[in-house]
Amino acid sequence: MLWRTLTFRRAPAGVADSDGLAAASTLAPPDESLSAFIGAANDPAPASVPAGRRLLTRRRIFATLLVALVVTGGIAYSQRHAFTAQGADLCRRLIGDENTARLESWYFSVDDRLTKLKFRVLGGDTNPFETGRPRVDYIARPEPRAIPYYLGTEGNPPPALLSPDTLGPAPITLPQTRLLRDTAAPGEGQWTTAGLPRSSPNDVLMAKTFIHPDRTRPYATVAVLLMDARRIRLHMSGGTIDPGGDRGVKGPGTIPADQYAGLLVAINGGFKGPHGGFGMYADGKEYRPLRNGLASIAVMKDGSIKMGEWGKDLSWSENILAVRQNAVLLVQDGQVSPRTSEGNDTWGYVQVDSSEFITWRSAIGLTKDGNLLFAAGNSLSAEALARALWAAGAHTAMQLDINSPYVLISAFFTQPGGHPNAERFMDTMPDSPARFLKTQERDFFWVTLDETRYR
Figure 1 (cartoon, helix red, strand yellow):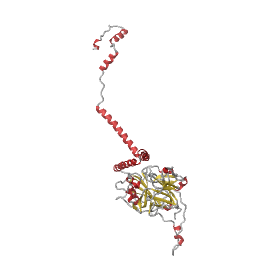
Figure 2: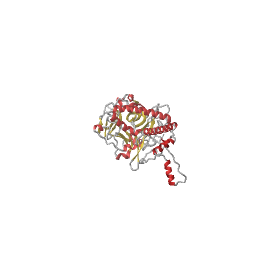
Figure 3: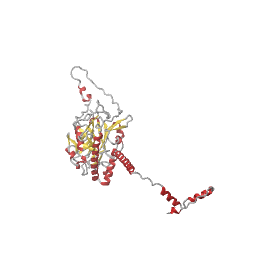
Figure 4: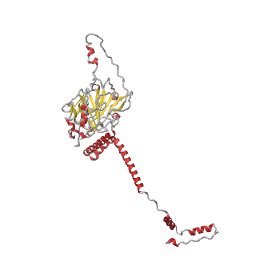
């Protein structure tokens, strides 16, 4: 081998440093590559990473990715309401209405299973009004009212003291509620004025309660708002896009600012215009033609409210100020309508039966006395919503829009400056309660204080 050809000379003793340097150079290998080769041969081999350590590193990376995926998925799930509407509209453009409806059906089924699992493991609130936070509202003091009284000890009081104008109007009659489960949750079925604008136990303008309509879903809750129809006025406004935008009929989509001082509540309207072709007339415009056989609510020019099946209970007259139709009646003549599970030809424009979707739903109704009801709730089929309204005292009721974030009831508390402060009617409603104070693309209902018919 090459290293055997190397020769070494020993330098004589006493040689100067320069000679020593020469000797040292003589001892060096004549080729640098050879020196590198010999060094590499003498260095120990690099130690390999133990298999156990490599496996541990891989497990750590996998665990980190899994945690990141779970956290990201949890955040996305908690914020799903913010993307549902945009995602559905995008899907309709990309894959069509029918396929989007099938995808929605699958999504609601999965979401329902996850909600059941979450409630089983973690539990949850069953009272939609328990906020745990105090709130102080400004309420304008009403004008003082003189109350005449009779001090006589014989005979009857003068007739003038017994007239309705003197005695004042009778208070609103709170409907008798029914329980749909064996055990009621605390406060379920009990009417209260707590947290409502301009309402108190001694002056019930509005009252609220809640109903659990589904034995298999204890968390499914329908919150119901009752309003004295003698003391309010119901308004309807078409949106800038729905329900008539595809027909070239656009609505204002706003609540006029001069109505803010008396604004009480607002709720979403019905389905989008093309989704079933349900009729609407408001703002002096026909957004969509009114059709026979559909659930309809009408506001008359004198402020009274009527509801029923168009062509049977209601028909067009010059006294009508506004009408909105949406699907079929949920409650009819004080009974749950059998048409709540009739099939999707009744509930929309696609073959998938949207009445079976377990999702957020909203409704509007009237009691037997003609008082107005707003209702909304989570994890509901159309039939469950109908049962809840019936249990809360609805004599007639119809469904409005479904799915979040469309479903929303906002309560408004007028502040000293005149601008209303918006609050969610249910704490779990996903969208901002101030939504109705902005221009809306979709139609909606709103209520103002009007006691001109209060006798």
